[in-house]
Image 1 (cartoon, each protein chain N blue to C red):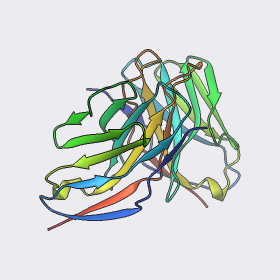
Image 2 (image 1 turned 180 degrees about the horizontal axis):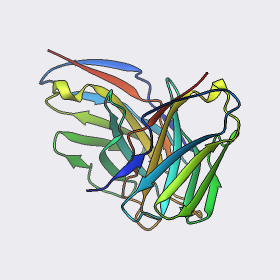
Image 3 (image 1 turned 120 degrees about the horizontal axis):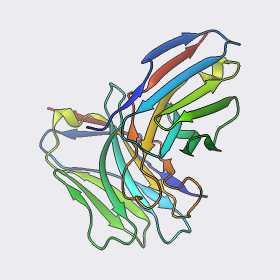
Image 4 (image 1 turned 135 degrees about the horizontal axis):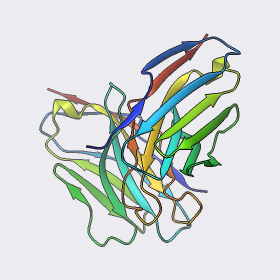
Length: 118
Length: 115
């Protein structure tokens, strides 16, 4: 069974500083994908970044980057130059690699609540 | 722009009622999903559908059923609502396998309270 672990229930960061949100995963699949989502207090889930298990480069999207360490089974999200609008819940998720009827199912971690302070 | 629309943002029902949560997507996606979100537990998959009239159980299907009569619409049904089904419910859609690097797109969620 797949499992995603986010060990930081809550984090604080000062505006303009960088912050790393941790995510470790457990899978026996060779092919899998890792996603990060942001959920503001309004509730919608916003896709941030994706990393495939065979991608050689770490994914980047603007101020977001994914520190992918395959051997350690970690996929940490790095947010550079934090802004007040980054305050939200952040979820790490993994897509299973097995080809099933549905495919593309995601398993989510429990989330990290990030608070950006002045 | 992609859009997943859930019929209600807030819903209050009574125990024993049959409750319908509706979700519509305009992206012609094959896959649709229902999750519930509870504090400290993250998102847990209830059911998903990969085609019209096709469905598969997720991790916590007990007490729920689903219906997908049209590609764009996926309904979650609480057969006899109970207080432990008070939660945030999120619908999502995505392209099928073969597009595995594409994300799931979510609706705004429905906060359901069962009294």
